[in-house]
Length: 217
Image (cartoon, rainbow, N blue to C red; front, side):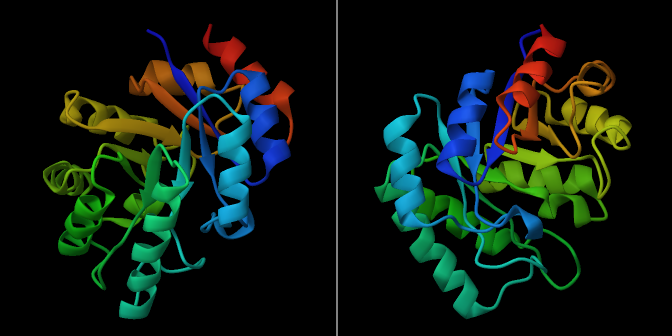
């Protein structure tokens, strides 16, 4: 089985390194120290001008909680429009309610706003208490892919939950495994979970991404 490696990046140099290392898609963010927020329009434009692989753009107004105010949701709507206008190939966001469940109504509305641009629901998913039901809700809302570690820890720790999600998805919605994915553990994560996509930080180190790609060859 061919496995796609998505490089998580936060600069042009990072993006170019991930592409050279063999990543087949980028997730472009700012401030990965807080889990990633919306990158600047200038950075999105620069990356889209220089790389040949698809670019997923993070739509998140701040770090911290995934429960957003009305003002923050308005900012996310504007940011989605900006990202789309600059050629984002995928939009990445996640919104929860006060009960740590998927905010289905808002997710459905944002997916509709994305139009034909695919949506990845990010690791906000790993805070829900009933992941299989949450996966069904996201599929029904039109989400294309879920970035998850199978729980709040690492993808290695969550491999059994990842396997359950892959089986439950049955090809209806993609499962992208993320959370401390390394060349030393990626083959085992894929073997145990059955995922066909993995997500890893590049840290401006093309060798790091290349080692993951090679470990999957």
